[in-house]
Length: 207
Image (tube, one colour):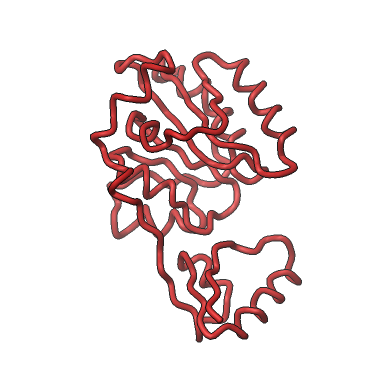
């Protein structure tokens, strides 16, 4: 029995105890990050991180996404991609829009991703708020994420709880895009002492 552990359990201490008990019964646990591995008993845990597929994520894809969205190459573009859930922090990015546009006029924002099940109302509220802000494009589900990432000037991962890993951060970096991410969970292993030029880490919830 090999278990691929991909989540950080935050629901309750009882849920984490169940997770640890189940992990001990596996022949091997493959964790996607040290952050995931740290919550499990380590004797049978191996960390194998995800990587961006170089056939899809590379800087030369730039130049495809912007024009259909009405964005010129000269517009500074900040974006994020992810499932819409309560802890993904999209509201924090929206909080940051006025300050960014005040310091860098003309900056546009794109936010892409579908709502998780039962979070459609949250997605609708966030989409409505995005529509009230200038130059903010709420895109919903997209099939051209690789093109989108390559056309950004900055990628933001604004999660308010620790990311189990943050594959989209790796994909953005592979696309040649600098990253601002919250300093919790997987991003600490991607952006940090081993690669200090990859991006900037900020406190969770800090617009």
